[in-house]
Every structure is written in C-alpha cells, then in structure tokens.
Image 1 (spheres, helix red, strand yellow):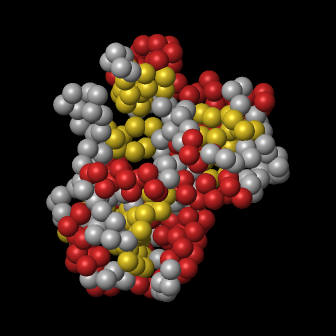
Image 2 (spheres, one colour; image 1 turned 30 degrees about the vertical axis):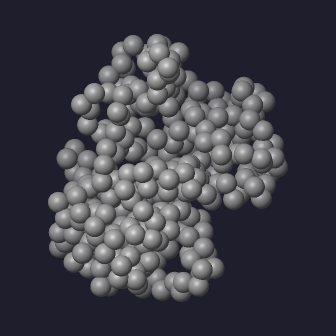
Length: 326
C-alpha cells in the first residue's frame, strides 16, 4: 500500500525525523503541502527534527530556510546537520584513522565549509604530499577545470559569478573531472573524511535562466569513488548510526524521551534515509514521487530492486507518495 501523504499516518508517531532535499525541499522551492503538514505536526505538539546530510552547519541552514519561509518552532522543532557532528569531532580533536591515528593536516576536494574547521587543530594544506587526510568538500568545479572538459559543458551549472558577471564556480552533473585527483589520492592511500554521504542533490540554479532543478554530484559520490579505490573512509551522516545517536542524545538532553516505536524517518533515498532508519530501529517512511527514489523509478528502477541492492526488506518500509500529497 502506498499512502497519498504523511498526514494519513501521523497518529502513529510522536517524533518525526525529516530529510530535507527530495522530501520537503525540491531544489527551487518547497513541495506543495509539505510546510503546511510540518506546521500541523508542530502545532499538535509533535517533535519535528530535520536531519540533513550536508557539511553546512545547522545555524546557517536555519537562516537560509527562514529566508525561504520555513521557521523554527513553526514548521520544525530542531534542525541538525551532519556538519554539526563533523564540527563536534573537529573541535574535540578526535578525528582518527587506522593509517593515521593522530592526523594534523588535510587537503580539500572541492569547496570546504570553512566554519566547520574554524579554530581547530587541523591545518589545511594545498598539496596532497603534505596531507595526513583528505576532506571531501562540496564538489564544485572551478574555471580551470571547466576549461579542461569542453565536451562536458552541458554538465556544468554555474553557481557563483564575480562582480563582472563572470562565472567562477560550477556544480557538475558528472563526476569525471574528479577522477584524476581521486587516482592521485588512491595512489598515496590517504584516508578520507566526509560529512555528506549523499551521492546527489537536486539543486536549483538561479544563474541559469528558466532552468529546472537538477541532480548534481555531491560529496558522497566522490567518497564512494575513493572507497572503491580502497581508501579508508570516516563518514558522518545518514545512513550511519552516528548521526542518529547525536540527534537522540541532543533530544534527551532537552528532556525529550525517545520511544523508537513512535519514531519515524521520512526520506527520499533508500541508501541513506531508509537504511539509516532500519539501522537504528525506527520506522522508515519513503517518499516515492519526490526526490531520489522518484528519479530512480523514472529511470526504470523499482522500490523492490532498490531495497534488494541495500539488503533491506521492502516489507519494513512505509511508502507515501509525498509529505503533503501531490
């Protein structure tokens, strides 16, 4: 059975964990009815926690969503990012790898979120030979890289321009530009740190007139390519238990009792959101007409096949068309 919206099953739960992209946020705006339903839950006294796989800090995300009309204590109770968990580990100085138990220096792939590394003991270096580990930042590409791949021009989406209107930073729909760097990292057998396990994210691009949101490469895909090359990976965020433990501990400190039988995770991605919920023993609720799974279904996949790939029993999953009902 596929429910039309989350509203049909809200009485079964007291604590709602929401993914963001592909669940209530489409890339260019909110899915119809999603904010209204989240506001209903908050008004009913339910606890609504947004858990986002992003290396951005939650304080910045709250500001960003507030500008778009999604407000704390109105549409959600708390917002937690995997970047928050990363920041906690960086501050405590307990980043450790088997190959390098006490790292000091790191090299960045893509663009880092400097706030996460502000005033910590780890120092960024600009060459791989001086790095103890590699941090996977947001896989934006720069002008020199775009120039090297003219055949991939349609895959590059500008996200930043200078004061003269010249594009300086691009999203990419194709991970090919990162392959040479991945090969170098693998050859050096450097360990890897990542705080966003998502392979893709559906992003809007205001610098491209009249463009629809599209699925662009994100940190998790680059990390998986490094994992496939044999690199040691330390990763924060869904589906890993670490982000759920972090959220539950935060809620308990605020006096909120966690009853996993009355807790659900609403997501659009079986590999991260749904698998994470299964890993920690809470109800997994999958959106099948929005986000990553909807895209996979359009490409010929089925929910059953996606579950088999992740070794998940489809009978464990509650399927809904969307949060608000499209």
